[in-house]
Amino acid sequence: MTTGHWAEPDFPHKGWVIEGIYDLLKIQVCEMCKVQPIRYGYDMYHPATGRRLFWVGCDCAEHM
Image (cartoon, rainbow, N blue to C red):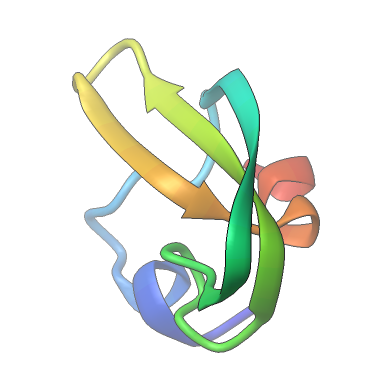
């Protein structure tokens, strides 16, 4: 994957923890890849950096 945060070498790509899954009630764009339209967002937390992404699609969440 080469879009969004996947294209940023200093952004953590592994080591994320799923904190929850939410129905976004409308279509949003994944915060990780910034391309994939999603309806359900994974709330992702990276314990080593303290970063959090709230709207991550299932494909990106699986790789994180």
